Amino acid sequence: MDFEDVAFTRFIDMVYSVYGYDFKGYAVASLKRRVSHFMNVASIHDFGSLHRQIETDEATFEHFVQELTVTVTEMFRDPSFFLSLRTNVIPKLATWPFIKVWVAGCATGEEAYSLAIILKEHGLLDRSVIFATDINQKSLLKAKDGIFDLQDMKDFTRNYQQSGGSNDFSKYYSAKYNAALFDKSLSANMVFSAHNLAVDRSFNEFQLILCRNVLIYFDQQLQNRVINLFYDSLCTFGILALGNKESLLFSDRQQSFEDVDRREKIFRKMR
Image (cartoon, rainbow, N blue to C red; front, side):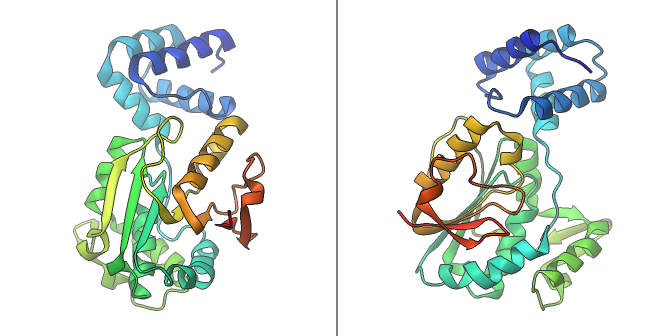
């Protein structure tokens, strides 16, 4: 669906003024695709009707945000990234007496649980806290439950093994009907909360921040804003892990980081 630029800008401004959600820094083409998808899902056939429904009906807006911000993910996605965490990052984390991790844009929690498994296998989970945040409240509730589709376990197991995992992956969850319930010991030190990278501030100091497949949806200005947020949130020598689809290209903080793994876009804060 084609949207007139002026009307689309007014719509985004309305969302911010009424609900406080700031989508102005999102990549426009990607945002328009997601809005069009929502309209199809909600059977809204013209943009004017969308504007009116979102402005006047909070329930429609909540559905809109859930659809707009949903992220497809899986446990140990891109196994080479998690293998690099095991090899290049875990030894650095082990030097701190207490480890705080921020998984930003955690979606439905698969990445947070993947990290918890790695920390557990290296004897670090008991002295770690994982803060998992997302803009999507519905996704956060699913993440907190730690329940995933049983049919996904075959793919998750393969990813785990390719990421350097050597245990029986099934030891981390129990199967019931069509669901896999992950062990509560993995989430005991997790804190799930809402956080909007576009407008919210730093809320702690971390030794490790993971944020993958999020910045690609932002324009250059918002990417720079978020990288500065992460910089402010990392302790000296803290690790920023972005994954191979992201970069520091549009950040004015490039010189403040050194490469830990250039291919997987894992960096260490130096100053």
